[in-house]
Length: 268
Image (spheres, rainbow, N blue to C red):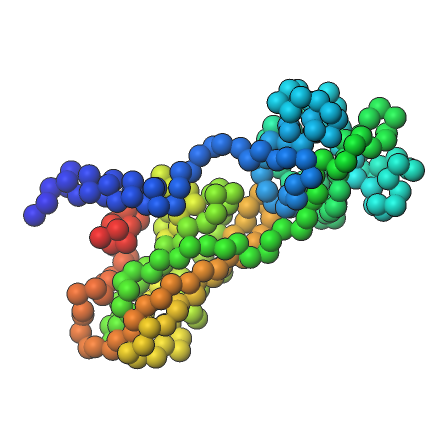
């Protein structure tokens, strides 16, 4: 038998392979250029370039003006003061597109063009950026283990979901997660990759599976990111069989396995 240390070394190698496959999880900010469309719920945005370009200043310098404004009617730009005007201050290096600037306490979202606003409360140049409603469904990558689902067993299978980089700090309500009709019975997290989340499902609870065929299993649920709720979904293809008794790939009782042990099953 392999020693525990060897098993952990192998697990670390697999984690490294996954890291290479899905890309690094870094703290690097997203640089926003002038005129870019940003979405409600996005965070970690560096709008230095956008502010400076609008003002004709050196792109990487400190923006002379950090006050931005929004007009309820595009036709009123240059004619009236902005409907909403806020100095974002030093947060221009790490801007969150949500409350309190772009979404008010009542949930109203200030969508459309945002401009730099000078001391006379007039717009400066072209829009800094355009705020848009969030993409309601977050595309995800899903891998299901094992690749053969045995309807003759009363075992389990795993679905590992990889979220896009911007959603790595999200929280997921397990009660909203399902796989082709089967509710998730357990959620597991891989701390080294905060946007990788695993779910456990009971094989005999999946709906409408046809024997002997490859079918697509769809995993979906809801996540909260920066206090805004989104849906996510993704799918993977498996083969369906029905054999009595346990098969080599069947995953048995998961109640006594740790998250790390379950991820080892995923990586094997």
